Length: 171
Image: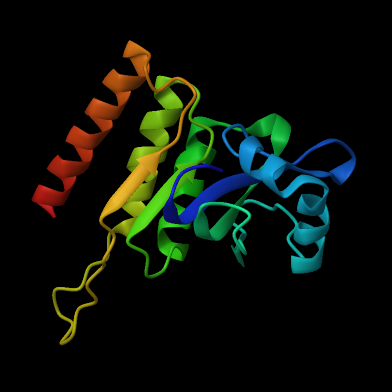
């Protein structure tokens, strides 16, 4: 909630009794909204189903201009593959932004790697034969993680970035 960026991305899952809950990493954002977080989701018609997205102006509640919500489905069934696919969905929905902060579940190395790889895969567009290819203006992507200083997480980030760069080079 304190990071200065254009867009903050959080995951939202369906918890007990169908209540929408922020996924790990997104709790500080939900806390910044306080008691208005759940009513805001309800007013958007956001159900938290897997792959669903919603974009909300933050009105200075956060240091970001917009909040992008990504549905992750059942809170008890979060896997690294779901996180990877949700990060890709977020990349496709982020729009025209210069900086993005990803507050998706990234508490360990496997999840950090899933977020980075998924987001990079979601940004890819094959435009070789288009007369006017779209040029993205995304300059900074931040992965927000409680374990950012742990060696396991740093190693996973390094490996994911290397894989993304190699994939881009091959494409």
